[in-house]
Length: 355
Image 1: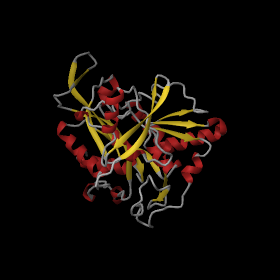
Image 2: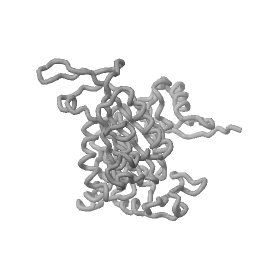
Image 3: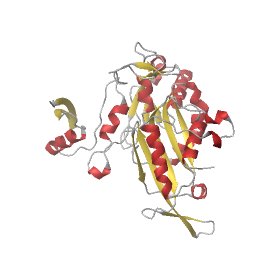
Image 4: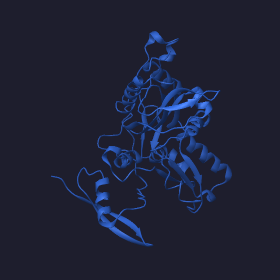
């Protein structure tokens, strides 16, 4: 029998805080409940959902990531994680009292990452709640910076960046941020991908990835694709995100046995990417040659994913000269047990039949 759950929601209205109660029916996404509240109280400028210190963003984000086709006025703007500079290193290194069964890399039956303080993977690394909250973040606020030395603060920033090389990092004390817009609000993390941020992962992510062996950021490169190859990219992502299986590379295509290394125990937390595709009549972009003439058509696809939820959409994009010349797509993955990026690159290349 379905049971209703009531949740309190605090609303700031005309400078005063008003508490409303949401009725969440069993299986309710949460979006419907908030929309019902908006029908009674009027539209909100912004909804800031504060979770508990043990919350797993990977379980919460898909609830508010609503398909455009459903016509909801609510959309997921981004995930912000606040890091306590005084305690974060200890939190990341805390093995905790709860661990998985030896050799399984999985949580005990009935235990979710939200409930567990930490668990142990096959490689001996320990995924803490702090790892989960950092790896899913689009913006990371390193607070209480005044309580640590400059050298320790640099170590914290490098450690955080080694886990999540995509997130924007802001350093604060007493929770004072320079502004709300584009720091906490209106960050548009799910409706756009910054190409320069993807490029930075190649330099930042590779140099600091060994600072934290538990969760890391890697990047794979995609050539300019034919429109028919989009299904292959989609199928590769379904295998990686839904089945937790990295498609292997046939040994007949390898230059050495080491190139056939497999990644068996991994978990993807976040995916972002841009790919460039030929022959998409629905949304093409012209780019110019050196003499100013229009030479080709190109569409741009954006990839966004959290855990096993992902989408690939066409986005408006203006190509600069360098990008129009190379037309090289990039996809960044953040997660546990990703190993060497070259292994993932070979798998994707083989899946797209790139030789």
